[in-house]
Length: 157
Image (tube, rainbow, N blue to C red; front, side, top):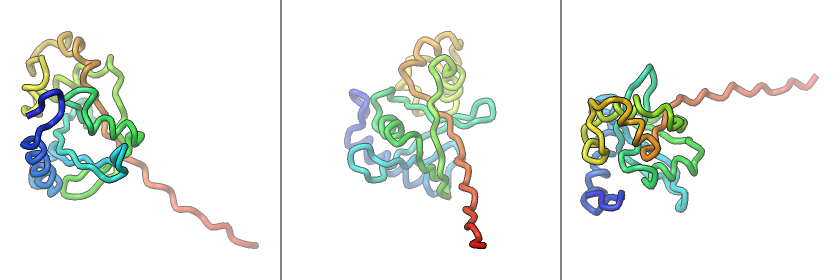
């Protein structure tokens, strides 16, 4: 369904279905829908994703590599996205440096079984094997966006 790293019509239908289910929040927390502004259209695009928890943070990983549509859109949007899981949450995705990705990639494969056919490493492989593929699979830390402090109007005295 993902020849050349891009989903065919069947993959797109499955993605649309899972985006709806995951947005509703009826599946475990790690299954979310990512919403990001399309880099060409300016319209919101939706992608169902699995997240990995590692060292107290949540991460999203591109199982299809660097040329994945959502990755290009996130980069173009400066990392600003909405994550839906029962409710809508504004978030910033911060790309993890290649040399820090290996343990996150291993955790991702352990927790997101649908990614296993797309990555050339077993979930329990040594970290050294994940280090070899780390540059091929973008990893983003999911950060909360601090709310803007209320603006204070100057009193005219």
